[in-house]
Amino acid sequence: MFCKLLAGAFLLGGLLLPGSNQGAQAAKATPADWTEYLLKVINTKPDDRLRDYKAYCEAGENLFCIDLAAIHLNEIGGKKGEEKAAFYYKKACDMGELNGCQKLGDMYAFGTGVEPSDTTAFKYYEQACVGGYSLGCVSLGEAYEEGYGVQVDEAKAFEIYNNSCNHGAEPTCVNLGIMYELGLSVAQDYSKASGLYKQACLGGVGLGCDYWGILKKKGLGSE
Image (cartoon, rainbow, N blue to C red; front, side):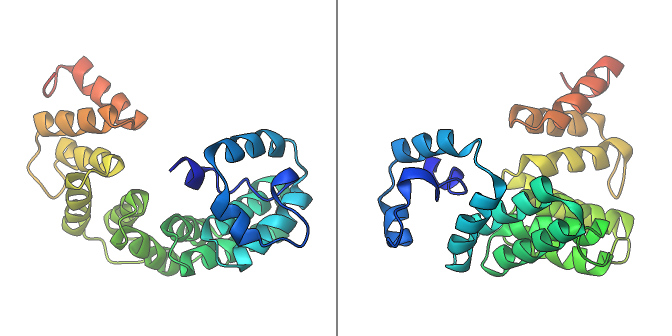
């Protein structure tokens, strides 16, 4: 897991030898190697990372495509950077990286680097959610609630949030709690809402803590 999280910061410095087999070196890397490299890469120029990340991305390493997109979007910016980011998020998504599908959906939703399209955004949110990515389910449920790229269907949104929350995806528990708190497509139930906010909060979702605290201050729901 440690190596996977740091996979986007590997290809520079002493860990990559000119002309060497990049894939073989990546496979042999230890957590200590990744830690040492991460310290080296912090101040590395974007152009250097772009060159090396691109090599891994094009070799089929989807996490490097995500990092490559992030560099274009956050460090280069402008229209060209946004277009490149969309390109690499799509490449990652096409390789099965659900985070890439979610981020690509966001880009279509906001028209960042692509022509805005709620319908296309919906498609990528759905792909991310069906694949088990919790933030994709948050976005997909919200699309059904607001009618972005699909007919408004609060019952469908509830189903998505409920299924995802029950499978341990705490971010969707917040949205599910809101539906119980407001009585959207379900009987209003402050205790249920409070429990869901608490579940999300204890799972590390800050927004869940905020909503849980608000209900407690109002004296609504469970403690």
